Image 1 (cartoon, rainbow, N blue to C red):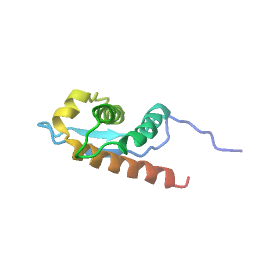
Image 2: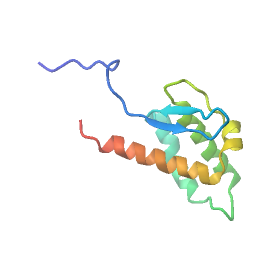
Image 3: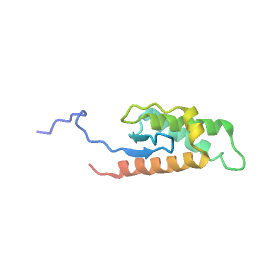
Length: 113
């Protein structure tokens, strides 16, 4: 007989991120929901149009919005706003975060159960 699966007891993986704000806020971020993953996939094509010399304002806004959705999916229930990130993160910080987050997702999907 198969062992019962109880999602209340499933150990999940998280990415710990410490922000460079005054409080040094630590976020323990989970894997994306389908809705967030869909946003990330759509954003991927927008990222190709953004560069340091010629910034696409709409794509940059989408990037910050996606980051707020990802960061707000944390164990502490801390809501991260676009305005907060716009004041805290420059473009390079956003790109560093997304690279780390995508590496995290890759590690989670590579793990064999």
